[in-house]
Length: 248
Image (tube, rainbow, N blue to C red; front, side, top):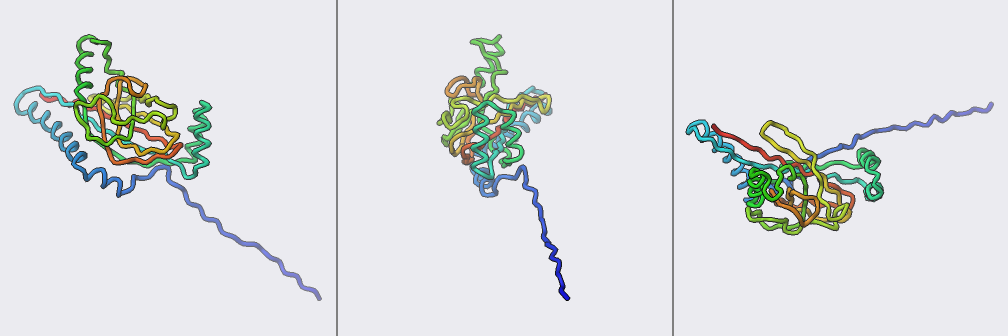
């Protein structure tokens, strides 16, 4: 009598959902925030708000303060081939297809608030010119273009440009990101712009400008922060928030 055996294959399947966003490395956060540049900017930010409230409420004097915050998020890739294909779509101006592809292949690293400095003399003069009936063609709504660079010099009110603005590392070359405007509150102006890279860079500075071409226009605000390292195909979204706080 012949016997037969039935083999029933068995297996197991596990699934792990990859996060679409994750916080910045703790080491980067500490490196950036435990600097005098960041600490002094944060102190000035909160002191300005308190001073505006204090003088307005207790002394009856109307004081308006301008304070700014810059936050950053980096979109990066798990595979260099995915990044290369994304750039191919971008260069072919198939932007919708590129974004759809990135939603499933890339993830975000959230660096949070990276800086609270510095409004420039040139930016303030430009605002005053606009109050003066657009003297010299000034229009504050033009402050909607985001540039970045690799300079590390400390921010200063006398800055008129970034120290080393990125040009050929960007895609498209020498073109700042046009921001998406919003008002999170009645006294806040926000602009969020995304810069895409087709070369590696250690991004350490950001500026909000009045024009889209690198090396041109008026600089409203310059920020310096610890290096955010990008590879070809990566993007950084900078979100700039300017608050006008009134006393009285």
